Image (cartoon, one colour):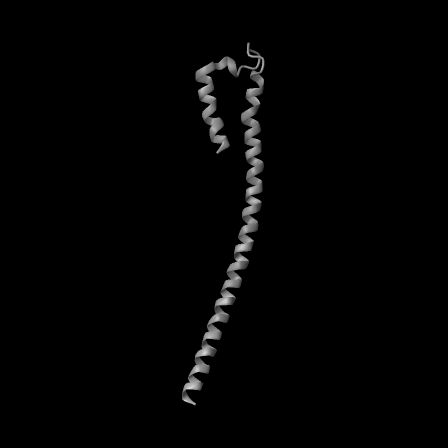
Length: 94
């Protein structure tokens, strides 16, 4: 999202202020700072991506554990239902 905003900002800035705004040795004293902003955002986004990948891996492991637990719980539920049905059939016949 933030990267998208910067990608939109750059052409608008070029249109508004011209290439002098980004020219490091031009008349705009802070122009060199504008050149490093997209790089800083890209590095920040890369770091965020690494954190996101780690978080996704953790969530995937947690999900696999939950799926396994759910499968065991379903099996136990079926077994208990079968016991209840068997117990009810004994009480009705006896």
